[in-house]
Image 1: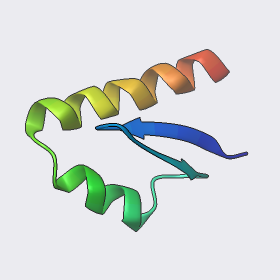
Image 2: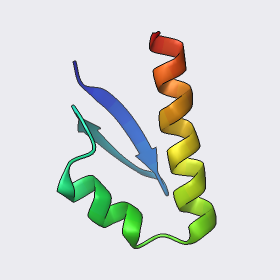
Image 3: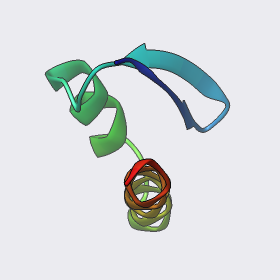
Length: 48
């Protein structure tokens, strides 16, 4: 199952946190990285 992630206005489909996604996240500030992580956690909670 693929999910649509949003990061700084950039949308992309991913089945998991691939190297590409991690590389994008690493370029963001700590706050944005935290927000992205929280978004992923909330998404997982909604699926469970």
